[in-house]
Length: 291
Image 1: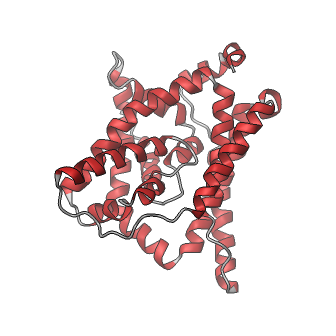
Image 2: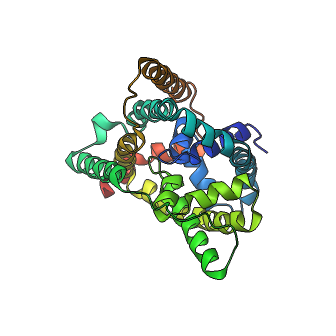
């Protein structure tokens, strides 16, 4: 078992609680994004033990984060909203140099790649003006229609969680079940949590294969899309500038802390990529003509 993945899972779980922040972005920061996709896709293959050894500690960390930090995140977003959001903006912004190195932007990006990046960035940024559908009371009892709503909400959220830049929590907000998910976690409503969780698991299994295929066959286009989504997510979580000086200073400090943390984790010496990822990078030149 790769027990070092428990703290990684904690970080991913915490960020997946925040509308606008993606656990996929954190996976990129930690250098495990490619391996995460490969392990989810290969969990039912002959090498399932190797993939399970990677995923189980990661899953344990995520579950612990969801159970322990849902109240803390709710408190931070309620009492220290601007500072918390600026911290995550620093985290997200800091991953861009790493992505640029991985994609070798200067060498590989052409006009079509920048077009994809700009279009997707603008499209995601535009969601900042979408009014979330959170007027209804949280679902606390599970009926058949409620199960299907929560299951497919979890499925859609899981696809967002795997894509850096798109927040699964924000998808739940748009659908109108974010408060239901948080309430289920804080009150230990097992049936409701399982309905959402089962959708997330099935969505992971399907989405990981699709994303892995696109990364392997359209590598630079996918990097352009991911960079665009991450840039767009900055506009989604930008809380505006606080009116008082102390809050501005606090936000500046948390932004710098997030930025430094990401730059430290995503530096070449700190990146912990699997051998399979390195092999895929070597083969990038062979497949780039497909783009």
